[in-house]
Image (tube, rainbow, N blue to C red; front, side, top):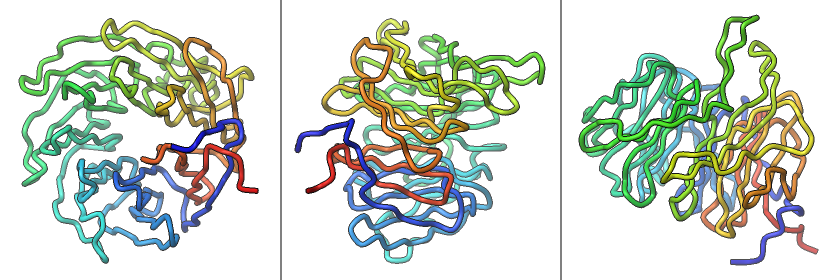
Length: 332
Protein backbone atom coordinates (compact mmCIF):
# COMPACT_ATOMS: atom_id res chain seq x y z
CA UNK A 1 0.00 0.00 0.00
CA UNK A 2 1.30 3.46 -0.89
CA UNK A 3 2.02 5.88 1.94
CA UNK A 4 -0.94 7.93 3.16
CA UNK A 5 -0.71 11.55 4.24
CA UNK A 6 -4.05 12.47 5.86
CA UNK A 7 -3.20 16.16 6.18
CA UNK A 8 -2.74 16.32 2.40
CA UNK A 9 -6.09 14.74 1.58
CA UNK A 10 -7.58 16.25 -1.57
CA UNK A 11 -10.59 15.81 -3.85
CA UNK A 12 -9.49 13.64 -6.77
CA UNK A 13 -12.85 13.21 -8.52
CA UNK A 14 -16.31 14.77 -8.43
CA UNK A 15 -19.37 12.88 -9.71
CA UNK A 16 -22.50 15.00 -10.12
CA UNK A 17 -26.06 13.82 -9.50
CA UNK A 18 -29.48 15.46 -9.89
CA UNK A 19 -30.43 15.63 -6.20
CA UNK A 20 -28.67 15.77 -2.81
CA UNK A 21 -26.98 12.51 -1.84
CA UNK A 22 -27.84 10.60 1.33
CA UNK A 23 -25.50 7.57 1.36
CA UNK A 24 -22.39 6.12 -0.27
CA UNK A 25 -20.53 2.80 -0.27
CA UNK A 26 -17.69 1.28 -2.29
CA UNK A 27 -18.41 -2.24 -3.53
CA UNK A 28 -15.99 -4.94 -2.30
CA UNK A 29 -14.24 -5.15 -5.69
CA UNK A 30 -13.40 -1.45 -5.58
CA UNK A 31 -14.66 -0.90 -9.13
CA UNK A 32 -17.83 0.96 -8.19
CA UNK A 33 -19.26 3.40 -5.70
CA UNK A 34 -22.99 3.24 -4.97
CA UNK A 35 -24.99 6.20 -3.68
CA UNK A 36 -28.47 6.85 -2.36
CA UNK A 37 -30.20 10.16 -3.02
CA UNK A 38 -33.24 12.30 -2.34
CA UNK A 39 -34.73 11.40 -5.72
CA UNK A 40 -35.21 7.79 -4.49
CA UNK A 41 -32.58 6.34 -6.84
CA UNK A 42 -29.60 4.15 -6.06
CA UNK A 43 -26.81 5.12 -8.46
CA UNK A 44 -23.84 2.95 -9.44
CA UNK A 45 -20.78 4.96 -10.38
CA UNK A 46 -17.94 3.43 -12.39
CA UNK A 47 -14.91 4.91 -10.66
CA UNK A 48 -12.69 4.78 -13.73
CA UNK A 49 -15.04 6.20 -16.34
CA UNK A 50 -17.44 8.10 -14.07
CA UNK A 51 -20.42 6.49 -15.83
CA UNK A 52 -23.63 6.52 -13.77
CA UNK A 53 -26.28 3.78 -13.78
CA UNK A 54 -29.57 4.39 -11.97
CA UNK A 55 -31.25 1.60 -9.98
CA UNK A 56 -34.95 2.38 -9.76
CA UNK A 57 -37.49 0.88 -7.35
CA UNK A 58 -37.64 2.79 -4.07
CA UNK A 59 -40.42 5.23 -3.29
CA UNK A 60 -38.40 7.37 -0.89
CA UNK A 61 -34.84 8.38 -0.01
CA UNK A 62 -32.24 5.62 0.20
CA UNK A 63 -30.02 5.74 3.27
CA UNK A 64 -28.79 2.13 3.66
CA UNK A 65 -26.46 0.25 1.29
CA UNK A 66 -24.69 -3.08 1.87
CA UNK A 67 -23.04 -5.84 -0.18
CA UNK A 68 -22.66 -9.59 -0.26
CA UNK A 69 -19.08 -10.61 0.65
CA UNK A 70 -18.23 -11.27 -3.01
CA UNK A 71 -19.71 -7.98 -4.16
CA UNK A 72 -22.05 -9.72 -6.61
CA UNK A 73 -25.17 -8.45 -4.83
CA UNK A 74 -25.93 -4.98 -3.52
CA UNK A 75 -28.73 -4.33 -1.01
CA UNK A 76 -30.51 -1.01 -0.57
CA UNK A 77 -32.85 0.16 2.18
CA UNK A 78 -35.08 3.19 1.91
CA UNK A 79 -37.22 5.48 4.00
CA UNK A 80 -40.12 3.67 2.31
CA UNK A 81 -39.43 0.69 4.61
CA UNK A 82 -38.40 -1.47 1.67
CA UNK A 83 -35.23 -3.47 1.08
CA UNK A 84 -34.15 -4.44 -2.43
CA UNK A 85 -31.38 -6.67 -3.72
CA UNK A 86 -29.70 -6.09 -7.08
CA UNK A 87 -27.05 -7.67 -9.26
CA UNK A 88 -24.25 -5.19 -8.62
CA UNK A 89 -22.50 -5.45 -12.00
CA UNK A 90 -25.50 -5.99 -14.31
CA UNK A 91 -25.65 -3.71 -17.34
CA UNK A 92 -29.17 -2.62 -16.41
CA UNK A 93 -29.78 -3.73 -12.81
CA UNK A 94 -33.32 -4.76 -11.90
CA UNK A 95 -34.53 -5.70 -8.41
CA UNK A 96 -33.91 -9.39 -7.70
CA UNK A 97 -35.77 -9.49 -4.38
CA UNK A 98 -38.03 -7.00 -2.60
CA UNK A 99 -38.50 -7.09 1.16
CA UNK A 100 -41.37 -5.15 2.72
CA UNK A 101 -39.23 -4.89 5.79
CA UNK A 102 -40.07 -2.12 8.27
CA UNK A 103 -42.84 0.29 9.17
CA UNK A 104 -41.14 3.60 8.56
CA UNK A 105 -37.56 4.42 7.72
CA UNK A 106 -34.85 1.84 7.23
CA UNK A 107 -31.67 3.39 8.60
CA UNK A 108 -29.02 0.68 8.16
CA UNK A 109 -28.26 -2.71 6.62
CA UNK A 110 -25.49 -5.23 7.34
CA UNK A 111 -24.58 -8.58 5.77
CA UNK A 112 -23.34 -11.55 7.80
CA UNK A 113 -19.80 -12.86 7.34
CA UNK A 114 -20.95 -15.82 5.21
CA UNK A 115 -23.44 -13.72 3.24
CA UNK A 116 -26.44 -15.85 4.21
CA UNK A 117 -28.15 -13.25 6.39
CA UNK A 118 -29.07 -9.60 5.98
CA UNK A 119 -29.76 -7.50 9.08
CA UNK A 120 -31.87 -4.34 8.98
CA UNK A 121 -33.07 -1.72 11.45
CA UNK A 122 -35.27 1.32 11.45
CA UNK A 123 -37.87 3.61 12.94
CA UNK A 124 -40.17 0.82 14.14
CA UNK A 125 -37.62 0.08 16.93
CA UNK A 126 -36.89 -3.35 15.45
CA UNK A 127 -33.85 -5.26 14.26
CA UNK A 128 -34.68 -7.91 11.67
CA UNK A 129 -32.74 -10.76 10.12
CA UNK A 130 -33.45 -11.95 6.56
CA UNK A 131 -32.45 -14.96 4.47
CA UNK A 132 -30.54 -13.53 1.50
CA UNK A 133 -31.39 -16.52 -0.70
CA UNK A 134 -35.17 -16.03 -0.69
CA UNK A 135 -35.77 -12.77 1.18
CA UNK A 136 -37.76 -14.44 3.96
CA UNK A 137 -37.77 -13.15 7.52
CA UNK A 138 -35.64 -15.32 9.80
CA UNK A 139 -35.81 -13.45 13.11
CA UNK A 140 -37.18 -10.28 14.65
CA UNK A 141 -35.21 -8.81 17.54
CA UNK A 142 -37.17 -6.69 20.03
CA UNK A 143 -35.74 -4.67 22.87
CA UNK A 144 -34.96 -1.18 21.62
CA UNK A 145 -37.45 1.42 22.82
CA UNK A 146 -36.61 4.05 20.21
CA UNK A 147 -35.59 4.28 16.56
CA UNK A 148 -32.67 1.97 15.74
CA UNK A 149 -30.06 4.02 13.93
CA UNK A 150 -27.33 1.56 13.06
CA UNK A 151 -26.14 -2.04 13.23
CA UNK A 152 -23.15 -4.20 12.37
CA UNK A 153 -21.99 -7.80 12.44
CA UNK A 154 -18.82 -8.38 14.44
CA UNK A 155 -15.95 -9.13 12.00
CA UNK A 156 -14.78 -12.22 13.93
CA UNK A 157 -17.59 -13.98 15.79
CA UNK A 158 -20.54 -12.96 13.60
CA UNK A 159 -22.64 -11.60 16.46
CA UNK A 160 -24.73 -8.48 15.88
CA UNK A 161 -24.63 -5.06 17.53
CA UNK A 162 -27.16 -2.23 17.20
CA UNK A 163 -27.50 1.32 18.52
CA UNK A 164 -30.66 3.39 18.90
CA UNK A 165 -31.61 7.08 19.06
CA UNK A 166 -30.84 7.30 22.78
CA UNK A 167 -27.38 5.77 22.45
CA UNK A 168 -28.39 2.39 23.85
CA UNK A 169 -26.18 -0.34 22.38
CA UNK A 170 -27.33 -3.96 22.30
CA UNK A 171 -25.19 -7.01 21.56
CA UNK A 172 -27.32 -9.80 20.07
CA UNK A 173 -26.80 -13.53 19.84
CA UNK A 174 -27.90 -14.12 16.25
CA UNK A 175 -28.77 -17.77 16.81
CA UNK A 176 -31.15 -17.15 19.73
CA UNK A 177 -32.17 -13.53 19.24
CA UNK A 178 -31.24 -12.82 22.86
CA UNK A 179 -29.46 -9.70 24.06
CA UNK A 180 -26.17 -10.86 25.57
CA UNK A 181 -24.96 -7.42 26.68
CA UNK A 182 -26.14 -3.84 26.85
CA UNK A 183 -24.06 -0.70 27.16
CA UNK A 184 -24.45 2.96 26.33
CA UNK A 185 -23.07 5.73 24.19
CA UNK A 186 -24.91 8.35 26.21
CA UNK A 187 -22.76 11.24 24.96
CA UNK A 188 -24.48 10.83 21.58
CA UNK A 189 -27.95 11.63 22.93
CA UNK A 190 -29.80 14.43 24.65
CA UNK A 191 -33.44 15.23 25.40
CA UNK A 192 -34.14 18.87 24.55
CA UNK A 193 -36.65 20.10 27.13
CA UNK A 194 -37.46 23.26 25.17
CA UNK A 195 -38.54 21.42 22.02
CA UNK A 196 -39.45 18.22 23.88
CA UNK A 197 -37.45 16.16 21.43
CA UNK A 198 -34.69 13.55 21.51
CA UNK A 199 -31.68 13.96 19.27
CA UNK A 200 -28.82 11.50 18.92
CA UNK A 201 -28.12 8.01 17.67
CA UNK A 202 -25.16 6.39 15.94
CA UNK A 203 -25.14 8.06 12.52
CA UNK A 204 -22.06 6.01 11.69
CA UNK A 205 -20.68 2.77 13.11
CA UNK A 206 -17.54 0.73 12.50
CA UNK A 207 -15.47 -1.96 14.17
CA UNK A 208 -11.71 -1.66 14.36
CA UNK A 209 -9.83 -3.98 12.01
CA UNK A 210 -9.09 -6.43 14.85
CA UNK A 211 -12.64 -6.30 16.23
CA UNK A 212 -11.48 -5.09 19.64
CA UNK A 213 -13.06 -1.65 19.42
CA UNK A 214 -16.43 -0.31 18.29
CA UNK A 215 -16.70 3.26 17.03
CA UNK A 216 -19.98 5.20 16.97
CA UNK A 217 -20.32 8.65 15.44
CA UNK A 218 -22.97 11.29 15.95
CA UNK A 219 -23.72 14.58 17.68
CA UNK A 220 -22.79 15.65 21.20
CA UNK A 221 -23.15 18.82 23.33
CA UNK A 222 -26.45 19.46 21.56
CA UNK A 223 -28.18 22.71 22.62
CA UNK A 224 -30.99 22.82 20.06
CA UNK A 225 -32.61 19.62 18.83
CA UNK A 226 -34.84 21.43 16.34
CA UNK A 227 -31.93 23.08 14.52
CA UNK A 228 -29.42 20.29 15.18
CA UNK A 229 -26.99 22.58 17.00
CA UNK A 230 -24.17 20.55 18.51
CA UNK A 231 -20.71 19.18 17.84
CA UNK A 232 -19.54 16.11 15.89
CA UNK A 233 -18.08 13.33 18.01
CA UNK A 234 -16.88 9.75 17.68
CA UNK A 235 -17.02 7.42 20.68
CA UNK A 236 -14.65 4.45 20.64
CA UNK A 237 -15.73 1.64 22.98
CA UNK A 238 -13.66 -1.29 24.17
CA UNK A 239 -15.58 -4.23 22.73
CA UNK A 240 -14.81 -6.70 25.52
CA UNK A 241 -15.85 -4.44 28.39
CA UNK A 242 -18.23 -2.07 26.58
CA UNK A 243 -16.55 0.86 28.32
CA UNK A 244 -15.57 4.11 26.65
CA UNK A 245 -11.94 4.05 25.51
CA UNK A 246 -11.81 7.55 24.03
CA UNK A 247 -14.19 10.25 22.86
CA UNK A 248 -12.94 12.05 19.78
CA UNK A 249 -13.98 15.66 19.19
CA UNK A 250 -12.50 18.54 17.26
CA UNK A 251 -10.15 21.18 18.65
CA UNK A 252 -12.60 23.77 17.34
CA UNK A 253 -16.21 23.25 18.37
CA UNK A 254 -17.87 23.50 14.97
CA UNK A 255 -21.59 22.88 14.50
CA UNK A 256 -22.33 19.52 12.92
CA UNK A 257 -22.87 15.79 13.13
CA UNK A 258 -20.32 13.04 12.62
CA UNK A 259 -22.09 11.15 9.84
CA UNK A 260 -19.53 8.42 9.27
CA UNK A 261 -16.49 6.71 10.74
CA UNK A 262 -13.92 4.19 9.48
CA UNK A 263 -10.63 2.85 10.78
CA UNK A 264 -7.69 2.94 8.40
CA UNK A 265 -5.34 -0.12 8.29
CA UNK A 266 -2.63 2.12 9.74
CA UNK A 267 -4.72 2.39 12.90
CA UNK A 268 -6.09 5.93 12.79
CA UNK A 269 -9.79 6.73 12.63
CA UNK A 270 -11.44 8.83 9.91
CA UNK A 271 -14.58 10.79 10.75
CA UNK A 272 -16.92 12.82 8.55
CA UNK A 273 -18.70 15.92 9.83
CA UNK A 274 -21.55 17.72 8.14
CA UNK A 275 -23.90 20.44 9.27
CA UNK A 276 -23.99 24.16 9.94
CA UNK A 277 -20.20 24.27 10.25
CA UNK A 278 -19.73 22.80 6.76
CA UNK A 279 -18.09 19.54 5.73
CA UNK A 280 -14.90 18.26 7.36
CA UNK A 281 -12.78 15.14 7.41
CA UNK A 282 -11.19 14.43 10.78
CA UNK A 283 -8.30 12.11 11.55
CA UNK A 284 -7.78 10.78 15.09
CA UNK A 285 -5.42 8.23 16.57
CA UNK A 286 -4.92 6.29 19.77
CA UNK A 287 -5.96 8.03 22.99
CA UNK A 288 -5.61 11.63 21.77
CA UNK A 289 -9.08 13.18 21.98
CA UNK A 290 -8.28 15.90 19.44
CA UNK A 291 -7.56 15.31 15.76
CA UNK A 292 -4.03 15.14 14.36
CA UNK A 293 -5.31 16.35 10.99
CA UNK A 294 -8.46 18.02 9.64
CA UNK A 295 -9.42 18.77 6.03
CA UNK A 296 -12.14 21.18 4.87
CA UNK A 297 -14.59 19.80 2.29
CA UNK A 298 -16.42 21.81 -0.40
CA UNK A 299 -19.83 21.10 1.13
CA UNK A 300 -21.61 19.39 4.01
CA UNK A 301 -21.01 15.63 4.08
CA UNK A 302 -23.73 13.06 4.71
CA UNK A 303 -21.96 9.69 4.48
CA UNK A 304 -18.47 8.23 4.24
CA UNK A 305 -16.77 5.03 3.11
CA UNK A 306 -13.17 3.83 2.76
CA UNK A 307 -12.09 2.18 -0.50
CA UNK A 308 -10.57 -1.34 -0.39
CA UNK A 309 -7.24 0.21 -1.46
CA UNK A 310 -7.31 2.34 1.74
CA UNK A 311 -6.10 5.34 -0.28
CA UNK A 312 -9.48 6.76 -1.20
CA UNK A 313 -12.62 7.79 0.63
CA UNK A 314 -16.06 8.39 -0.85
CA UNK A 315 -18.17 11.21 0.57
CA UNK A 316 -21.84 11.78 -0.23
CA UNK A 317 -22.57 15.49 -0.19
CA UNK A 318 -25.68 17.60 0.18
CA UNK A 319 -24.70 19.59 -2.93
CA UNK A 320 -25.61 16.61 -5.19
CA UNK A 321 -21.98 15.50 -5.53
CA UNK A 322 -20.12 12.29 -4.77
CA UNK A 323 -16.52 13.24 -4.06
CA UNK A 324 -13.68 10.74 -4.13
CA UNK A 325 -10.82 11.99 -1.97
CA UNK A 326 -7.27 10.61 -1.89
CA UNK A 327 -5.47 10.44 1.44
CA UNK A 328 -2.23 11.80 0.04
CA UNK A 329 -0.75 14.80 -1.76
CA UNK A 330 -1.82 15.69 -5.27
CA UNK A 331 0.45 14.32 -7.99
CA UNK A 332 3.18 16.73 -9.04
